[in-house]
Length: 310
Image 1 (tube, rainbow, N blue to C red):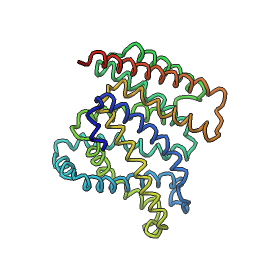
Image 2 (cartoon, rainbow, N blue to C red):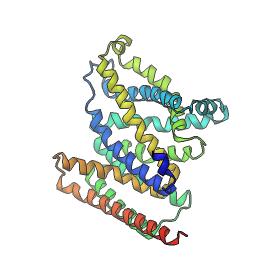
Image 3 (cartoon, helix red, strand yellow):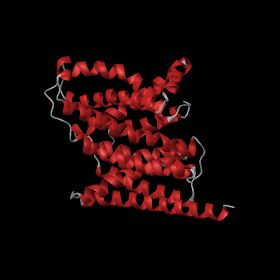
Image 4 (tube, rainbow, N blue to C red):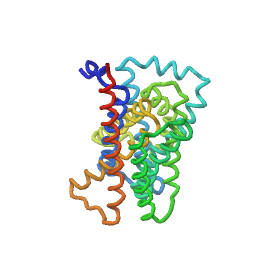
């Protein structure tokens, strides 16, 4: 049914829609992580937080296998893996995305949530700079206003922090490098992500046995396995939408739309009764103003396209 109306949407609209939907789904992942089943003490200190990142990779790889078989796209994956000249770029892609998968789970469990948030606040600004200076993209007036508001909000967030952590740098610089590399890999989002996971899978399996004895994993409750399948679904779906949006939008706009996710988290938090510290309010207000500027820019573009449409 969706395909029936797919042609009615412009590529730009598809990209924006995918970006907004993936931001909403990304915002739900931290809530899902909080539902993690209780674990026995790990063989190494803090191993339980590493364990979830490992399970994410293992079960996501299995999910990609199922998806590609069901959609009859498995031959595309096989052809990609046979292209040995691309393996250095495949390896670099996996190397760049692996820390992001790990940090998203490890940081909240190790009192690094604020630095993780700062990384995601900084990431859109870095993407805008890459779009402007690497890909020579031009910004509309309203997009420049959005950048200015976003910059103010990010600087305010930094003013509240105690400094720039390595976590911030890994997120803010790692993802842009990953996206730049992905532009050089001519693979669809699902196939490209499947290749990333296949490369990471052996390392995840080895890490699993360092964290817990083999018999521990084999004797987990059935409900725990279902939890890991759910983790794969909630992790893979937004990532697919994320890369799809990246393929449809300019790098600058793609970066700015990254502020939708923290805004969703902010709004959901208020709805469920969380309180925001007074000194944190300016950050979110600036980000919301940036998004309003983007909405106005989108409306202006849509109105202009209707006028010029024959």
